[in-house]
Length: 512
Image (cartoon, rainbow, N blue to C red; front, side, top):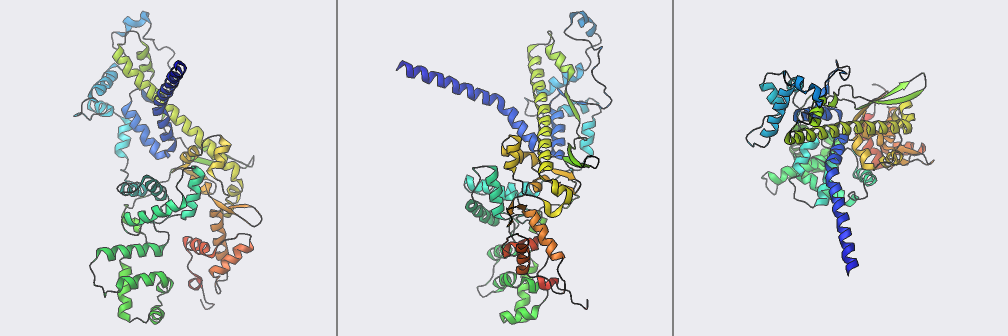
């Protein structure tokens, strides 16, 4: 009995120790993960906020050449008397820092360190930069996540919905198939939602998100969703066929509508001109890009987080970080000395030590972000050399799990490193996630990405005889002839995503 009691005691101590370590490391680890996931522009804002809130964090001015070798040590008793009059450099700034600390406990006070500085007449270049910068609204993803958060669903459904929302494009459509999304999610985590769960979440998204038509996989599906929503909310009689007719038009006659072949549509359905016009009027109220109403149009600024450059002398590619716009940060030497000074009281030392620790953690997190991002870029260079040389259809499948194994990190680290970030390459600027495309296998056993497959579809259509354009089945056969087995419905999806109409609409007569 005594042995079991002692063993339980030892295990309890070990458990408490582990919990204590987790609690001690947790804030730092969480901060590091957050910084890693931030694109460059977001990181700039975070640095500004950190400079606002932590007086122990300073920006190194470009004019600085290093530490002053003649600076006096406040801990040296021999110079202590010389430091009394005039007061220590920056002591007023520290007093205002203490004032901020005291005010932070007052609910009625909202003054920040920068506001206290401005109040006392100091020029603040950081605040000036923020004031002159244009305000940024919420992204489409954030707007949709806010809506989704109000949905009443189980935790697995909510998580699946968030994954799908991350794949909704600027028009409101799913940028990839649910199968591709499920495959990527499974490669990132063994606990990722299944395909069936994602499909169920998609149904909930389509019924919950506003405006109607969001999260559709095709234009037809989006318009049908919009018609269904309007029919459910708009009073109409049982004899009113406009909604059913409009759905039938978009499901079976979309190409004829685009070609303005009204006579053929009337003949097929045996409709009067008035009935067809009433159905067309219903379609005019539908938005082919429903997400446009959610976001205010503004100039899109793409800031690459990394740059891949070609060196013709060595015939090689190198990667570097685009961190030139980030300020150089350091822990305040002044506060380091004050924290070590014997005459500094305990309360002030606690305030200083806490700020210094947070400043060092923040600087370390930024350095770790850069190192991890650069390692990921180097993996892209190593695995996508052919694409960097040739572009287009040369992009190979590059699962994040493969990169994670090569870097000896968890796959979630790679996912965070590329999330929302862009890379400038000799082929142009691209979202980094695009370079980690999933793919398929050719008949010869070679891997080929879905991006490359799309490029081949585009190439086949571009090379066709415009007087006799290829049908979707002919394109499918052409791909098969190149060793790329693809279902006809997938060819249709890629053709539409590339902006190519059906064969009869691409036909150009010899007279033209």
